[in-house]
Length: 204
Image (cartoon, rainbow, N blue to C red; front, side, top):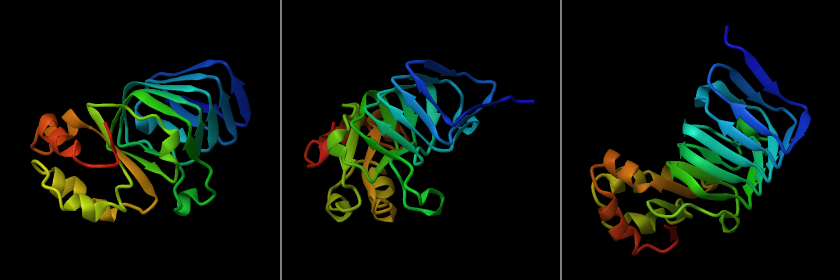
């Protein structure tokens, strides 16, 4: 039987939390981590996020952490390292997250690799983003029509850009890893960069 490890109803300060494979981890409810290092080696499906806050912590993904929704977690002054694919940060106003338990501010992703990651309901001026070969499109939903008028290489325009109007209006940024998204969409990182360099409100 897979063991359950539950961190809840407590504040942890200055510790290193290792989350290796072989167990199911629950974070929250009512968990505060302050000045901690959290090393995530477990696959996304073995990590359940209830509610909590990370303050001045380092969050490191040892492998590729896929499709994790951090909507119920609040991050302040945190540093992210490792590979994050399809992750969502910031609170979301849907039925599951109606209490706005989460959020993100003053965080640093400069040492992370983000691909297909979305930021919700946050001030991106407080977020330090990774540079090329990652790139981040700011205000993607509001600027969808403007972006659609450009000629994009491969399938990037038809898959990514044409899909922007379907995103929730509270998505304030989307981030990609150019070599990875280019391989999926029949283009190259160099061809993508040639277009992105002419687009305002892109961090790369």
